[in-house]
Figure 1: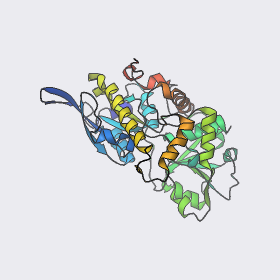
Figure 2: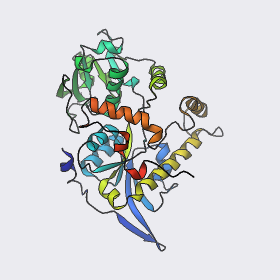
Figure 3: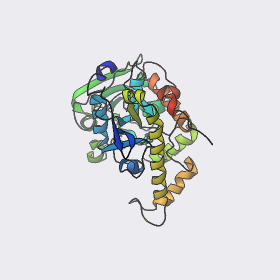
Figure 4: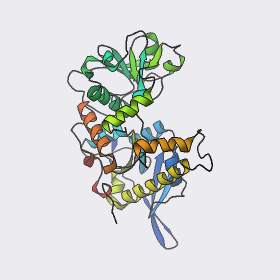
Length: 352
């Protein structure tokens, strides 16, 4: 589906309501994300965006993405960063971005290989067949960016197969133009897990753990068993902390109420600050993880006081890398910059 086709479905032109109470008028907007501690206080109303009344929907992340992209069922939504940047590179995208990044995950853990194919390093993937759930999946874009720029892998020497991870029939959700030399095919009749187990593919890259890894009897392993150590070294060398998801708003809402974007950014920031305070509290176990506050202290050594920064400038290096990866892999029609991803109203905030 093209951007223009998508903009005509799902009531994309509907107007938000203005709610009046006690002589005060507020903009009523709907928001959908998956379940995050660092968004919870905004969803429950403990934190409020100035001038806005939010109705929140907490849903599985795949459902959030599908219903927002396909039908535009709410005004503001968590969105796959890969899908968002693909739309942004086209004319008249129906979305604008708010620099709130609710999910960030390093992806060295996403490489799964068969033990009988002689794959001990990234370069060994050359000449092999590698499965992917979608070419434009955010995790895959980052993983291929690592392969190409850091590990020195020639992506044109890999045979790429797109299919559902654990179920057959998954399809690409955005348009893209594959770079010259990329060997790409699609399989609708099987899943990547099944093909890993049968030996039809040699490896897979996936954000979701494949069933084959759990029930393969040791035939399927991670390329990086100590992926946390590898990810730490990658971050130290590059400064890239992969952003998986972004908060997007319907363009029609933003164009009528441009002030709402910054007010939402500030509210998301406040909710995240409250979450970090909870995690670092030694008084009680705020999350069911042993030594949670101590682990939070370890994070600060590498990432500073805020391990999940929002805003443009604090994330410019990662955003620039993702823009570069996306264009080099044909996900975006043109090379974007971090400034192209967000309207001027949310690129900077006032300093006193």
